[in-house]
Length: 209
Image (cartoon, rainbow, N blue to C red; front, side, top):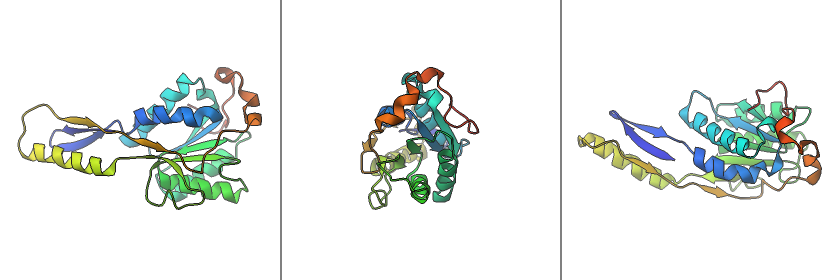
């Protein structure tokens, strides 16, 4: 994550695209991927989505991925999962751009009789304190919240102090925390996707990558 001072405010840039690119090979072992984004008017969501697209292209898996836009809430994650899991060829893994949306995904999957970890993998983003407490504990991407706060304060003090130097920027590390909500895909789920670039999108009514 990169933080930059912009004008008289503090802007947030590159909200995790690089860490998403590093994490997605772990998720993309599934080939059939659902992505629940936040609102795409948000730079945060757009940057994370860019990381997803970049990695999917490198893995030649963009044609077997589908996206559903949500609003970071548990309820919107549940709705997004309902549409993704209602496809003729539903995803075997769903990546949500927040842990709360991932909780909604888990709710919907369980209601449909799916076993988290065994039948479908779920990944979140943020590592909120409840992520390790839900059933099963959630695989997620952790943000360095203390470092984010300290860095933001330093940038703000530079602005208030009238610093005339170019805007400072910092890149802070993220961590992929693997818990029990994810597993490698079953071999049978890969049979339709030997030729990923020419495969059909997993859900025609959703916008593919």
